[in-house]
Image (cartoon, rainbow, N blue to C red; front, side, top):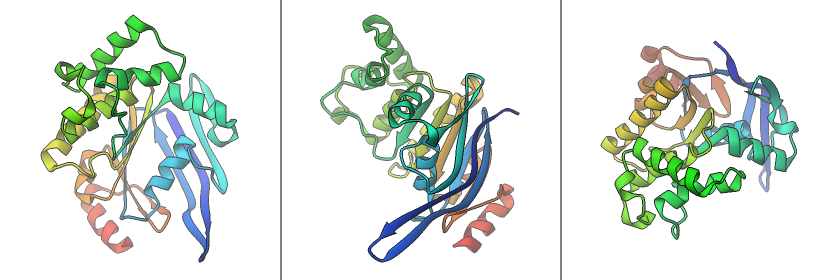
Length: 244
């Protein structure tokens, strides 16, 4: 399989009034194209920090993060801030637990926004693309509604559609089902699984819910900033509890 993301000896330390806080310690990880990888850990374990190292939103303290795009191997943290933002806009979709839809824009306008920000906007084609994505998440009939007029689960599906606006090869998702009921969370997983199996997307998702581990093609545990090797599903519960 072809590697698409590589983390080599990644460390992240935050300076606080109480002293240094180690959020990530010597993290090594390789993610292959087309994988649906789950990072499982309790609150404060380093899950979101790990995602922010991958997407370049936060600076690492040491180590390297590489991404493979269009046959090129790029160092995420050696890009300029503008270059990193441009790369991320075209190659990586980000899904948050809090949806972060703009309340004054309709659903279709929210999905079109990343195209505009990436200089990839065309009035007709961009709207067609946004409507196609709303159809993918089964919300096309709500295209012209504002976010306030749909449910939380529907807003999360719109957020996924928005993350796909520029057809990125990679999606990173930060607790996307954390505030949703179990039935709605299942719908979100169904969308992710379709994106992996039918469109070849690579998805990295973090969650605190060990019960979701079996839904991933590969599950890892993070505890106290350290990443545990891949675990068979039968052993993952034990590993998670032991690291707690």
